[in-house]
Length: 338
Ligand code: P6P
Image 1 (cartoon, rainbow, N blue to C red):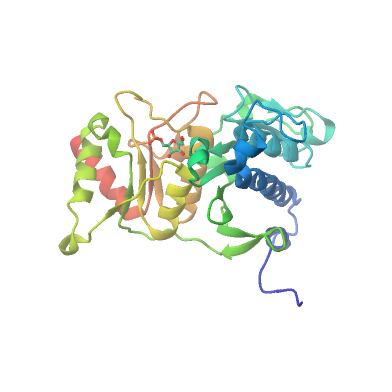
Image 2: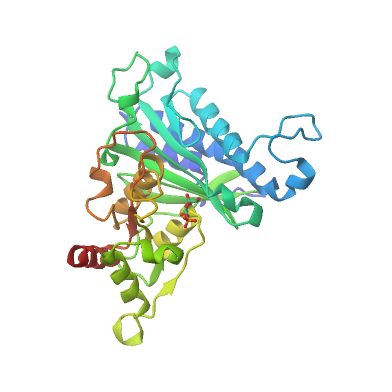
């Protein structure tokens, strides 16, 4: 069977990107390939999640006599493991871990990147078979190479990201990542066990007709958000609509759909959660970076997400992200109505 040379694998793509920059060390390409490897391992376990009654739930011992870990923790350990044993990462931060993990070995201390991730976002959806995902981002460390990385390497504003991406474990398994050169999507081909380039040069449509928000919190939102949602519902054939409301409660899936088709995703502050629910460093920043690379926008309702200087590893932020024109309409409504 002839190999399809027209379809680039993730490894081939990252190496091809490297060839365009002869002076590049290849560390970032290696790091992205490491993430792809961990994603394939997580994908195997996520696809078995429906069999938990057979394979055992977290905290139990499975038929092989192994301790069954929560999938979030399993995913965390997969991504942390490949990055620790790679050559490109000095340390990581994760939603699953209270503090940063400094790898502190000779090779890691000489690596120039640090990585942050939400290893399995939306994992509450696993038992009802709704798509879930991994979110990650990469920064160049600001501490000197040759020494262990430090917490300040992780508390940089999102505009300093070198790369950001996500994996969706869904109807197919996809890895999307962006660098300043663009955003590309890779779909896992189970027949060869490789991520293959399926969505080159992703651009978010400058306008859209999909709005994603949890209507259950409507009366907790500030007036400007309520007015915008109201305007979305009043769209019809005569004024650029009708709009569709789509929200499956899994951020990676909701934002991915709106990135590809055009749309807006909102997780506003509520009276119960005045700082919002989503985490700035490893949920909002990565998607803000990706969306801006693809021509969209991302704010916390008052300022550009990527400009925010973090103070805490797990701080939360209100989050609005999507097509440029929809975002500008929302921003106008929030400015007018507070
Ligand atoms: P709510 C999943 O728990 C998550 O962190 C995101 O993936 C998702 O967008 C959001 O929370 C859903 O939150 O409050 O609408 O159920």
